[in-house]
Length: 65
Image (spheres, rainbow, N blue to C red):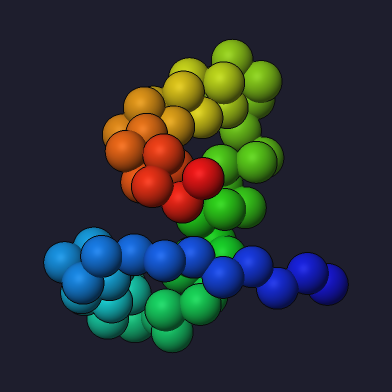
């Protein structure tokens, strides 16, 4: 198993924690389930979702590079 660390700004971290609480899940389980959903989508949907995620987070990726 691989461990991945992700930096989030405080607002996104709070929003994610709020969603996890809303679904009654620990934060790590919500993130893992979201990743499972993303990678298990059919290929066209996966590509669309990946492009959306990359475009929404482009500035973050630039800062991390």
